[in-house]
Amino acid sequence: MTETKKQKLSKPKKTLVLNAFTNGTLYSQIPGIWRHPNDKTSTHTELSYWTQLAKTAERGKLNSIFIADTLTYFDVYKGPNNPGPSLEVGINAPKLDPSIPISAMASVTESIGFGITFSTVSEHPYLLARRLATLDHLTQGRLGWNIVASYLPSVGRQLLNGGELLAHEDRYAQTQEYLEIVYKLLLSSWREDALIKDKSRGVYVDSSRVRNIEHDGKFFKLNGASITSIIPQGFPVIIQAGTSKQGKEFAAKNAEIIFVGSGNNLSQSGESIKEIRQLAQNYGRDPYSIKFLVSAAPILGKTHQEAIDKWEDYSSYANPEGSQIMFSSQSGINLDKYEWDEPFGQEVGKNNASIGLTKNTLNSTTKTTSRRKIFENSKEYTKLLVGTGEEVANIIEEWVELYDIDGFNFSQSVFPESLEDIVEILIPELQKRGLFWYDYPVPNGTFRENLYQQKDHSFLPKDHPGYQYRWTKDESREDFENKLKDEGIL
Image 1 (cartoon, rainbow, N blue to C red):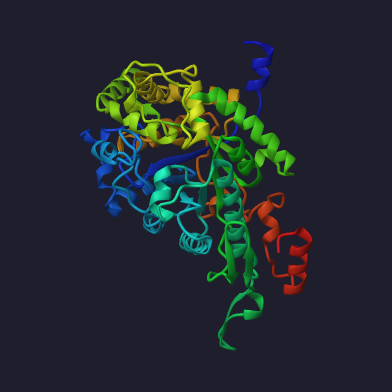
Image 2: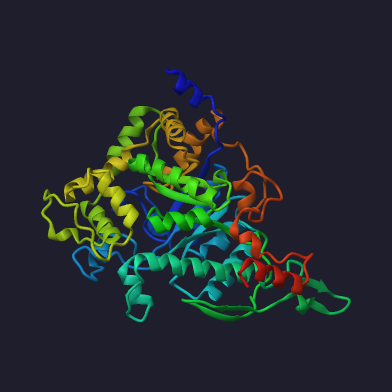
């Protein structure tokens, strides 16, 4: 081992941030695996599916359950506007509203957080602010908001009166304005001690400590007070995934957790981490207050051969069209017009859905690829972390050292079997190595307290741009509004 490598490995080990990744549908890294006899994702319409997921994940002491969401069909493949292939394979539909099961999951757990995707085009920010507040109240401060600026063209047809989504750069400008309105509603409308519940005087809320939010922006207008009281965390943990130029800027300014790709494009992920940490520093933030996560799908066995056998078994259920449907939607490129081995890669459609994700996929296949390679690449992704707990932990430890990764979104190939393997086989090995805690640092704490491993750290840190919106109990309305004017955010 070289001296440089020794120095790298001698750094204090990170306590990893580990999430269980899921969706409100038949989600798996292996499209079509719902046919596997051990897979129970088709029961996602039953509360018992969600409560089992939550209890298993908390038994493993995972940071959170992250629920992704895309409120649309994947309808580019064999399209346009053709949901048929995705329906037949079971990709992204039928799908539940992922916010509904959170209350049930919270009722059977105590410490695990809940990261949930909400788009900035699916509803008015006033409505979303209430939804976020409700969920943070009912979970006692265990909510995280994954902010997305929806990218699939069908979202425009479904939600925007048949119109088109904004151009990529404008979507992030709209998303920043949307976020600022939610900052104002959750942090600047009610003083933190406005809810007094004074039985002797019969006063529930001190109305002098509640103020209207007046916003007249490029994309949104609002004049009214928040209808919810201050929430346990002040503001949900902010999560973001975006590797385009605008996405990186938005994330560096606002996010506390950032998703930066997957195990099959780690070099790009590592470069994104470096770049975003520097951008965050430019915004005056502590760059290491941001936790960078990559997605991975461990397939584990008590022996190496058992893990290999599982991978081969799972892979045998993969539907080749699944990878085509998913890539077509993320890129805007209808792969059906190409032959199975016909090279392509230079076409990036004008409706390019996820620019960063598409480029990462093409870069990982040397900028030209084929339908066959897209399918094989999806299978290889699930083979990256196949082995015993020790073997997979070795790979994880190497990735963390080489690419400055802070944690992982763990997908399951077969539910609940894959999650149970993560909890029973992988987590103990990571704990033994000092890479993961044995218990939550703040039992019964908020998402943010456990994210930063610090009690009484529920609110956004002082170097975060959202902190300035907070109306504290020590500020009169006049003083607070003068402060907002000085900051240019009234």
